[in-house]
Image (cartoon, rainbow, N blue to C red; front, side):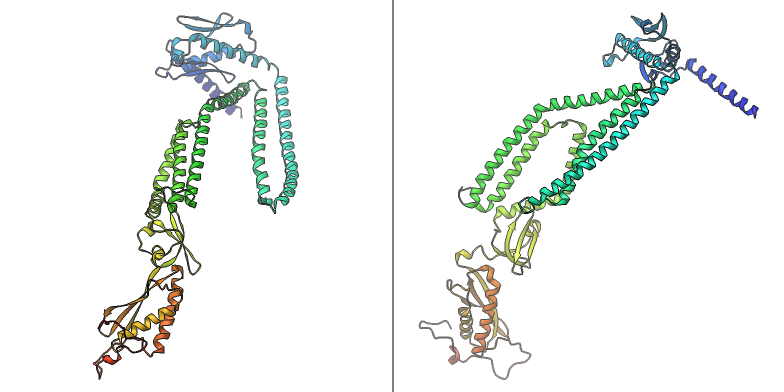
Length: 537
């Protein structure tokens, strides 16, 4: 059992000797900067080799010399001397380490004097930390203070959580009671909204307090021990630097924010003027030759959107962080996403503008688009909504609408109604004058057909087995087109049945026994009337 222990001690002794030999043996070619660290404090940074020793070897040798006198050193005997060869940090006239001119970062504005002064200050702090813990009882008292601080912090967290829970319950009861008063008013506050509001309010109020409490506990505990006291000081310094940077950034951003606020207020005044002017054009209170009331709403929205886009472009340089790389990267990413995903949106938008400013459709007009027939309810920038007679709302993308044939039954209705036609085919054995009279009789019986222009019948085709008659009438209300046509079809059937005229069109497979002709005496069978003037033959 003793032999393995002796062997282990021999190996450890050999390793320590090897490490010490490596620390003092010059290693050429390794000139990386090295820091002299004492109790985790950075005393100085060495960048140059001296007499073949690398910066790392110089730093380790200086650390060994300093650690040997920390507990018994007198701060009064620590000083430095600066000359043309460099700066020498000494204790009781004994050199601790040397700072060469090549060790100083002159590009950052550093000097030998400043580097030596920082080294002296760091060593004084290290000596004070080391001499504050001369006895084991000092570490025990430091650990006791750290444990006590931990218990106090835990109790504070517990008290904070319970206090927040108590306050939340009280606030919930009060707010729910107040929400019942607003339940019948214009602003309805539900219990879910109250709970969600309290949840987010707790996050906003509690997290900063918890972070502050955690920071205070960590800083106090680290400051109780010599090896971690520098971390506490660095933490305090970083937090103070961060808060100072935030305050300085906020103060420096105030002029830019003032300009941005001025641009927003000016844009708001411009948009309100645009809305006021174009709403008067929409209602007909103001008439301008180059603006149409039907396109005033779209023009108003476009001008308002354009005004805010221009304002945003003007505000952008004055926003805090607008020139940072993060802000630029975010702008590029958003622009790329918009450019890749907005191609169809831009197409819909352009089609909507074409529809609106070409005035092919207007709200309230009765139209037929492909197989859909109804009243135009809304013409948006991206889609058009049509209400059918079946109480359906059909949304048609503007890009599709632009490529479709649109029948507008209302556009010319003000000039004499909408003309609709009814086509019938009757055999040659029925006098054409009788057919025309019967069709006009059916139109006369139908309500919703305008007397002017008068209904008229045209013979549009002389086919092999029948004549094609086209009755054209004018409707007073285009929206009732289907209802009026339904009534007209019924009256046409009644009129033809009353006078014994067959509506079914004949088709032959062989010649009839007798020619299908109309005798001249039957040219004016009832209800056809012989005209006073010369009739067409």
